[in-house]
Image (cartoon, rainbow, N blue to C red; front, side):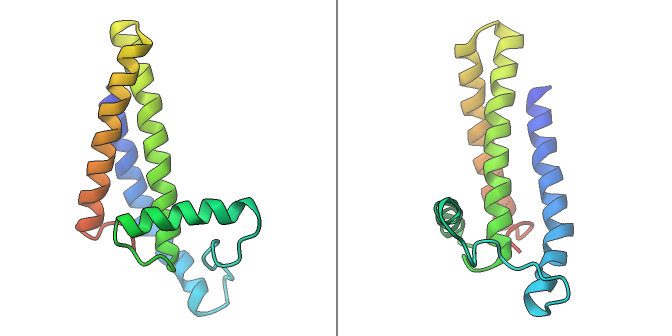
Length: 127
């Protein structure tokens, strides 16, 4: 069940990315909404986070200056954290062991990274 939840979460993130990022992208061309890339004017700790986000986008071959880069990286890290948490729960429920949970978490992380590679290659994310 936890593996299904992991896939469902990735599907929801793809839907949110397809629906919401184009709305936020309007703000970069006309200042009606005023939403630009949050990494454009970063200060302090947020610059480190934006640097990590941009390195993830360069791995996935996404334009690092677009707002799609910010949200794709954000969704990627959310998915990895969710995969680890679901893996820990799956291992605890099925085998009553944290070590088994780490095993399930690593498998779900690998599935998540592979799914993001496929989704971005197909053009469903990283708009």
